[in-house]
Image (cartoon, rainbow, N blue to C red; front, top):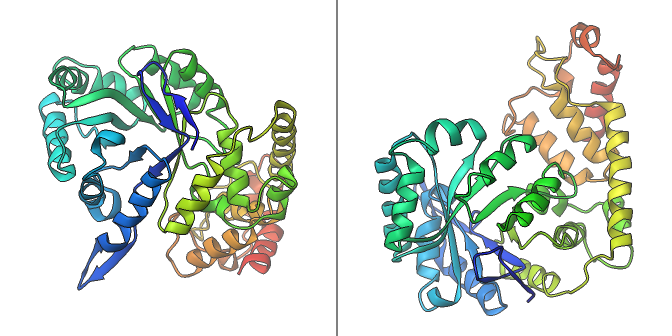
Length: 375
């Protein structure tokens, strides 16, 4: 396992982190619970292979992830850095403290190494976090008491709002999205590193999108990767300013495969990395010929989320992620999609979308093509 200095925190973290949001689950009556008999050995195998950073949150796995992680940490607590999160629900420091204490109880630990203001944006930071008597004050007090070692945040705002939060000086590490399909935070990764923050990446495999086989993605790293997922993980780890790539691992095989990848030095040369970026930029331009995702075509009178369906079509047509695209489209057909939408066969060819499209796309035809390819 490779290790890096984690910003200016004084600790070294493993290149691979364990994301505890996809632990194996059991159905017990009407409720789901974590299958500890499977989950704990999976986590322990990661630790045995050198993973020393584990990330959880209060709402993961039916609100039980922290409990299982706490059990798995027994005998490992002094060897592993624990990360969890505080959902900023209001501007009250007292309520922030209550949520911290609840996580400490569920984790059955005396302290948390990296404690995150969860999924914050600049507006929330200004109006709910950095306010008198608010979460920042509570976090500084908790750190002084030794309940948390480092104050962190996870980020989901527009890329341009990032630096102002970092420049507040409160935070020692950050968790943010970055992968082959979404490189919008690339400059923010560099900025965080420059300012001395540890950088942890969520979604290195694109939230599962890049876990599906893709000849297009495999072509990016000829003879260097065995799978699309490995290509995606190696790309993220090749960024010199990334410290930890989190992977939500749900079986031992996945742990062992990812640990092997995270133990490779020299994932990409600078020339190879620039080649990959150039090719992905060309793919992005091609995808935008079919749809830029501007949303001007919305709303559709038949409740079809046209940009979402065209996005799925682009995963198939441009990136070769056909299995993923078809799986997501079939979820939409069954009403199970995470994006609320009817599927393309619901189109009645009213033409309202085409009259609003700034690219003058043949949307009706593309919807038919989408259904034919993915249904």
